[in-house]
Length: 112
Length: 124
Image 1 (cartoon, each protein chain N blue to C red):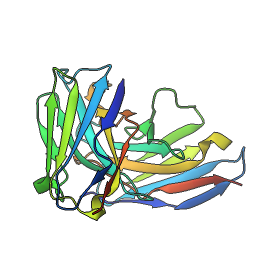
Image 2: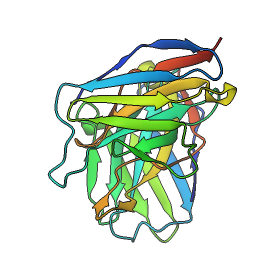
Image 3: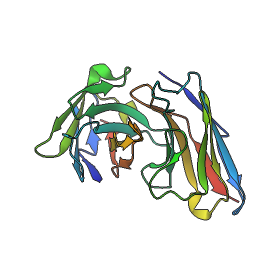
Image 4: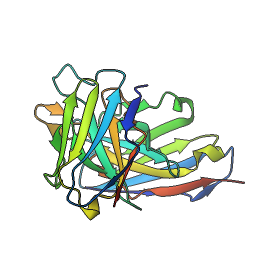
């Protein structure tokens, strides 16, 4: 099983300020097809997780461009350029190179 | 694309849990498409239990494989999860989700649509 480690586990951010979450894997998530199978999800309070970023850096449909994903191999980052109140919730990374996919432990983001 | 989970809210220990995922907006007969079952205990991260694909290929979580069965009924647009010998630690919100959207010559393995989830409590 591929273990993912997120940091920090908790983040308090002032609206308008940037935020960054890291996700590390013990194994490379690079597929032979050249794509990296690392996704990011946001679970807002009381809701199902929703996709933000897939294959490392591609924004899911309808996701604002203030969200971006980067990284390669074993180290990945989700960045929010300017945090808004609606961004509160728990952020998860998920690897899908190995099936079934596995998730990081989550990072809770709150607004200051 | 929409998905919706249904099944019992309360199950006794040692019983078998059966959940149904009813979906619309896609077909499980389409190449690359899959439906995953995931669960999330209160306050914890999601866990993928398994995925069934358009060609009836199935992949299960190694730690739960001997207790899980996932089947599909393409005529009804449903996927069924069966979990045997449940225990209180299986208490969680159970989700089904769509996967397998083509992207850039490859197939995304992202869960790009999720159901609303159904809370299952295992207790005597």
